[in-house]
Length: 324
Image 1 (cartoon, rainbow, N blue to C red):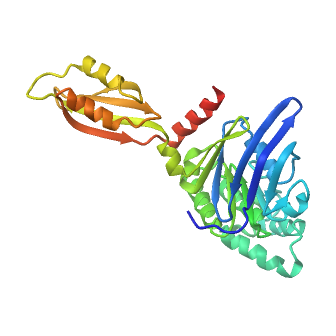
Image 2 (image 1 turned 30 degrees about the vertical axis):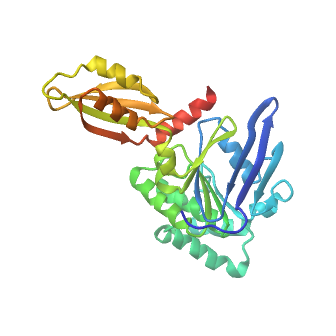
């Protein structure tokens, strides 16, 4: 993770948003330093879109504080918007415009200074790889190139914060890799918050992941740490000692009694007489106790290997836990 310094790019404290009697955000807290690429994840209805609309200044909030580069959005939303580039999920564009015309139009809307306009359009085109389609109509472009145009319009005014809502939605695998690499490149100069339902994209692209559910933050860590979690799977293979057969059921009962073990499934083995289990655990790493259980049973431990939980599994368990 790159070093970051100065005031946070985003600082959200006890953020609440109500729609009538329904409270979409129930005291959300997080901070994003400058220079990070952050994944913002959550199931449908978790409050992601509400949070992003508040961050971009298009939706008022009920209570709390939302600051972008030290500016309270409720006090000066226009000043905050000038520092933000936004790519919405549906990526609306004028299809009958050429890319050149569209970016020129966006530059005017963003009030880019006339003496800087040509240079900033050229820089956005170069960074997003649009040179080959610069004089083509947007309606003629592939989905991948249209996403690039969307990113170009979002960075045209050289924002300090880039907010991307489902930037790889609807792309084919090759296009996803292209946009992923482009986001990483943009992240070298800009703070990025990226909302996505594709957890692999967050894992490959982001330095940090925030998971929100029912209007609350339920996780905040690196993809690597989240994937490790406080649960997972352990593959355990044992062999008999001195040709004495292994009593599978007796061994299974012993292993089920180990602290942290929540489930055991038998596994196929290549060597006759050996026994293998896939052990599910939560909260407590049971490897030491599993080792002792096998040794105390006068059996031979051939393999004991922990398998990391996937980010998808971590996401499912974290969000399900809050719902429960």
